[in-house]
Every structure is written in structure tokens, then in C-alpha cells.
Length: 338
Image 1 (cartoon, rainbow, N blue to C red):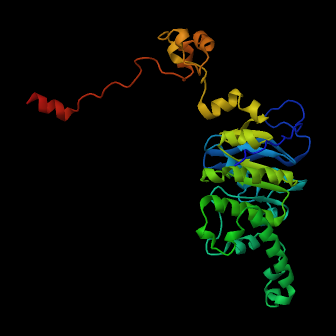
Image 2: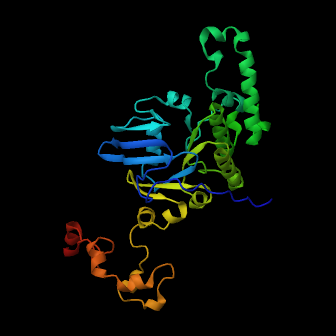
């Protein structure tokens, strides 16, 4: 099998410095002061966010950062406590999910939503919009919708061939593997002829044999003129295909920028790994000589760091601060005294 050919990244997407909430040259989504809380937990707390048009944007962050909740809000599957956002110049605040999809903003889910007791072809045809046969009285007269249905079947078969699922067209969706269901969900989303495709963890649970195929399909979406926003934990994939990266942590946007620059951002490192990953605590406390420091750490930073400061910041624990052993219970004392 030949190695995949690297494709050119889209650049020049932002105005000014790449920072959280920075303006984009041509944004397709603009969100302002979007907040969503569950009880006392602020799942999403985004002051300002713009998604660039015609590019592949990755939304990354640790588990619980609010990525999927933000997806749900932008696509109408959930409503915020406050805030507003627009898609392609249209205000989407309070717009239901099916209307958002009809406007050209479609999404897939981390857990696939294929209807298992329908065939792959039937699943595909469900994704098309403005079908004449969906109206009750028109559905009773096949002559009114038969031609459109045949055209939709041709469109669906072209997409299934592109996603290498055409041999499965008459199989029940329940018989597909996890990776094939991901492909089916992406292909079904394209039946709406969208402008923006939002993918929630497209690689989750996918057999490695299908990984490159999925990557190519996502890149093809951009080549076909669509904008892509996807959630992903696979940093190799993010570096490979993303033109722009947005980083969330604890509901907030903490960094934005080019994939390679974002990966070096201290806020991103802290969000994923915790603070002061560059320090070797053995060097900081004087137990280890600087020449024997962990090669993944910074010897100079470790040597100049203060152990007392790390304890004060809660990064490290003072020696001897571990909990003392529990005192013997009174019943044991009574037994010992007998």
C-alpha cells in the first residue's frame, strides 16, 4: 500500500495574534458569551469563538472540557443558559436541530446513530432533505415522489462507492463494524449537501485499518469546498489534517492557533498533562544531579525551581506530609489490656 500524500494546509485564517477568541478572516461560525451549566458545573463558558470557513478545525481538550456540549449547543441539540451564535450569517439561537441541519450545518456523533434495522441504503436516503414522499398525502401517490426517490438512490450509491460501502448497500446497518458505521454516518451527513460538517471523535473505536481511510475522507470534505470542525483526542491525527486548532479546558477556550504551535503552548500542556511537566523533581529537591536529570525534562528549569514554591503552589507535597497511620481502635486497646 502506498503512503498517503501530504496535502497543503490552509493558512492565513486569523487576524492579528493567534489567541483565544481571535478574529478570523472569514468566519462561518461566530459565538458570543455562550454558557451552559449543569447544576453548579459550568460545562461551557465561551466568551468569543470564531470558526474559519473553508478549513479543517480541530477542537481538542481533556475529557470533561466541554467539547461535545459545545457541539450540542451549536447544532441545536441543547440550549444554553445564555449567549448567542450565528452560522453563515444566520442567528441560530433557539433554532432546533433539524432546522439547523436543513440550513447546511450537519454533525455526526461520538456514538454512531445508524438505524440498525434499516438497510445501509435506507439509512442513506433518510439523510436527504425536502423529500416529497415525506408528506402524508403525497406519500399515497408514488408518481409524485418516485423520480426524486430514484435520484436520491443514485446519489446515495455514489457516496457509498466513495466510502467503499456500496457492497453493503442492502445489508442491515446493525451488521456493520464500528468503523463502517462511522463511515456510514459521515456519508449520510453528506446526503444533505452541507456547508459545514461537524464530526464528534470520528476516530473513536475505529479499527486502525480504517484510520487512513477516514482521514482521507475528512480531507476530501475540505477539497469539495466544505468546512470541517471535529473533536479528537488523537494528536497525531490533529497534526496531520487540521489547519487550525481550538483548545478547551474546563469549559473555556484556552488556546487557538496552528497545530504545531498550539502543541507547544504551556496552557495546552497544562490542560492535558498538568503544570510543570518540564521539571524533574529529583533535581529540584537536590536528590539527583543535574547531569542525571530525566531527558524529557528541562535540567536548567529543574535546577532553578524552588521546592518550597512548588509545595506552596500545591504542585508537590512536602516530605513527611503523608497521612499518619491510624491510631488503634478502642476495641483493640481493650483486647490488649486483657
